[in-house]
Amino acid sequence: MVLNKIETVRNVKNEIQAKNGSNSDEYDINNLWNDNEDIRSLKSLILFGLRGMAAYAYHALMLGYTDKRVNDFFYKGMAAIGEDLNIDELLPIVLETGEVNLICMELLDKANTQTYGTPIPVTVPLTIEKGPFIVVSGHDLKDLKLLLQQTADKGIDIYTHGEMLPAHAYPKLKAYPHLKGNFGTAWQNQQKEFDDIPAPVLFTTNCLMPVKDSYKDRVFTTEVVAYPGMVHIGDDKDFTPVIKKALELKGYENDHCLTGINGGTQVTTGFGHGTVLSVANDVIDAVKSGAISHFFLVGGCDGAKPGRNYYTEFVKKTPDDSIILTLACGKYRFNDLDLGKIGGLPRIMDMGQCNDAYSAIRVALALSEAFKCDVNQLPLTLVLSWYEQKAVCILLTLLYLGLKNIYLGPTLPAFVSPNILNFLVENFNLTPISTPEEDLKKILG
Image 1 (cartoon, rainbow, N blue to C red):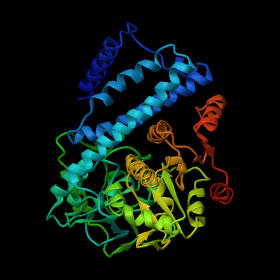
Image 2 (image 1 turned 135 degrees about the vertical axis):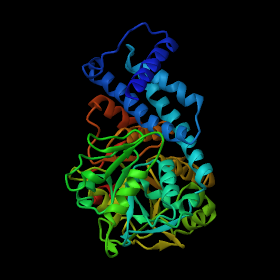
Image 3 (image 1 turned 90 degrees about the vertical axis):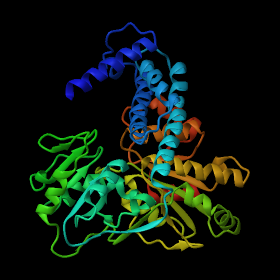
Image 4 (image 1 turned 60 degrees about the vertical axis):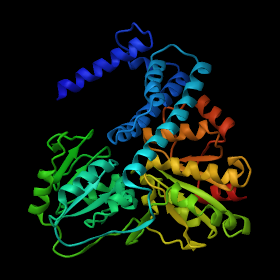
């Protein structure tokens, strides 16, 4: 299997070279890191953006959905990284990465909703019921569906973890009664939360941290994630080893109460564009009447580095008449808070996984049409947490759409040079976060 994958990579490389008329045998990636810092910055934005977009395209492909414009751009983007281009030539490709990623996110949204139904808001408990169970982490809804099918009527409950939480909102997944709730919080807490867990954990995609001895015998991987010494479920998707481990470990003897980071015992999810736009008139009326003063999109990729509690404090300090839209694993910083409701809508609305930034974009564009104004004139502020490549491609999509006044933190990407950062600040008013108090004063002042 490994040899087949290596051969596939070689074939793709040859195809890229042929498609772009390149005769170079290899491109030394050190040329990128050692290049002029501004060129390195722009090429890195393209490279990491492509990596993030590839993850979305892969999930869509697994459900049978693909797009020629997206596939062709992978060739163009990778070729640009190996070419001798100046800043003026690279900038349009950077923004085109964002443009094509929007197409890719729309494709994955279509794949998910046509396969599993339009998400419906749901409250998800954090308590783990007694008895055998399996925890599923990652992003791949198809793997979750296959596991649900194979565990039906076996007396095993299934719990989501991390970015798999939004699965509870999809009707065709929620239909399985043994999809019970959510285990723990975001990926960076797994070493603590999985310590001595009496159940197996199936990782379907990334975010697998070095495995501790206390649970190394119960970690299973599948698809594109793997780890030395762990059992990998291959293309046959036979989850029998996972099921056997769940029955062997037997789960908790009594109901086991977990909480979110702030002590909450339940979270909500499922507020995708289908749900929010279905009550668009109520939202518009609430804005016009003054019941809703501002929208904040607070979310993105989380991490363990100090300073990320900024997002928790920011959300706590937002005005009582504001709405917080959120997505990706960054939401675990505050998604168990109860901030009340406005007009029957909860103040915190989880829109889903990182790729569901598409839902936030759809809502923002719909509101701008309803109010007959530019999207940057809306009472909307994006406060994003950055960590990895999927955050890069989403940021590039927002820049392609011309969205401004984006707050980004807790630190800026190390590969962005001062000149490129100045360009983003001057043209898009991209702002590094400071303190919740200072930023809210600036936003609402």
